Length: 158
Length: 204
Image (cartoon, rainbow over all chains, first blue to last red; front, side, top):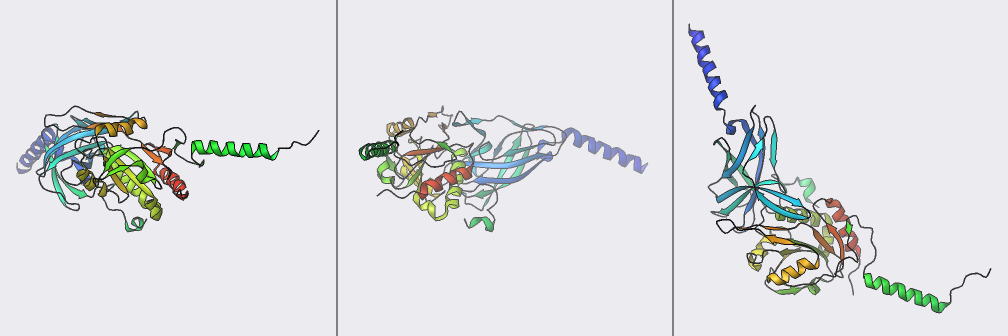
């Protein structure tokens, strides 16, 4: 029977997809930006990661052709002191969202191969614990930016 | 009962004593919103090198309202965030911002040369000045304000982080410490207190 065979084929495909659903396939990235600092100073990378899947995933880091090294870090302020710690793995719960934002989790982008100019896009491969990776375009923003978007004209006159 | 009468001489003594006391504190009380430092810490004093590679001291900034902040340029997250926020504060102050200076003092003088600092501070705000110098001179300034920093162990590639105090010390035009701003405080409270200090006349 033609229909039965198609059903088995489809069932098999969806089963395979269920078993092998890579973290990269269920994570949606938005508001990806980099704060560019002058010269070869390390830059901070920020992104909002939404896990649309039924399974928890974990971000372990990122790679980019534009930087020699990328590290996942966390900034914290305790007892009036600011410090940074390395993060091995950042869990994103099923149907949950994790925000990498200034003053908290961030990607530390070190040793740019060439000067990154504000306004340009830099591709990063976000890496997950299961070995999958998600390519994301990060918008380069000037040093004194506060987010991925330029302030609206109504607010820039101050 | 006889009405209470002050003799002019006694009144004069009282007035003089009051003026002396005011002189000791060196600062008019103002309705600050941030943590008030008035009278609790010593006047601004340092001998460092500016991002224009010139020797500078606190005297060079008398007449300006000073925001003193300790950081380092290889800090990719918190320091740039603070500097970006201070840029917003300066924009909110409008023309008054010209009476203020952000002094970014490097707690990583080994890597932060005047040239590196120059590019760094100018990427944030035109009122920002980078200061560096011998470790001893930086440490003296840090200790003066009971602040602290620690150089963390280096990684394999020689890179290292510096943990440091996250507070901003605000001084009036006479170099007196007046308020303390921490990341937990509201940005508008900093703007408010800076406006109070900027409204004070420049010393003659």
